[in-house]
Length: 312
Image (tube, rainbow, N blue to C red; front, side, top):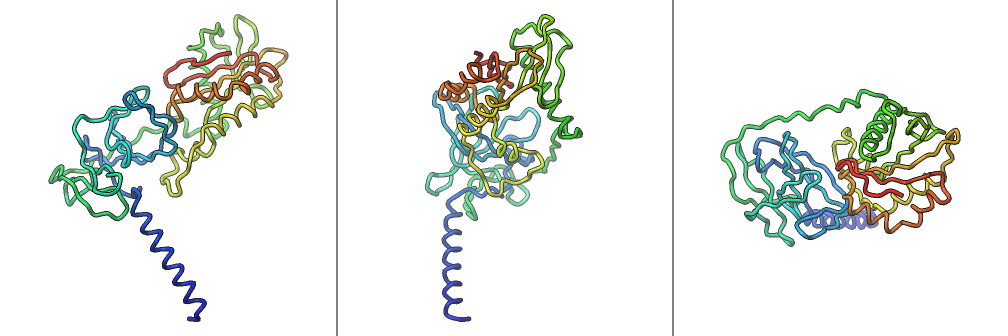
């Protein structure tokens, strides 16, 4: 090995040692986490974004990796750095346990997780390659397999799935909006036209739909994607503005009938409060959708709570 090759090898080895040292300061997302309420159930790794409320304090979390229990009716989640084990049910505030959970001895004192220890379960440190252990939870546990429910739309082709989702969102919005939409009139329409055509009190009316979500985030939460190998960040402002601008610039075939825009979201991608903050921050471009854009009205619809949180 030449002197130059030897120097390159040494630099590479030093860089790898430094990278390994840095990895030991972070949680290892390859660990197998079990639910502390259902010790036989392996929790599923997922990601959440947006503003999360805890107690009377609003916590802005740009990237939060956590595990959730797949057992039906269980709302237990585990997040190693901020929350530990806690209950999170959509539409409700986070609920922490009254008793203290075991924590590691590292900087920041990460919350320990329930992991497999022999035939039983015990608390283990979530940091990368750390062998620190906490209390034993159970000496012997039988693993329990939980099958996730199948998505009835999964068998549809991409275009058919999109139309089915659009119609489902629109019908949910229609039942909430108090608009006098004639029963049985909503129909999906192809591009060049807005997404949905219906009649209101016998008159033709159009609705265009727009989901407040970044395409990169949609890819990350795709059920076919099994790992969060390289991580990602989620900036809500950018996808929100991009969506509004793209809708404002669109030209639609409407047969001279009016068209409204329905911006919709669910709680995986932000609370109503965080979406309202975006609307207030970008009120000028929202106003342009009706002043110079193609729309009569703009609605912001909370899919999960079935609530119209804003209309113009």
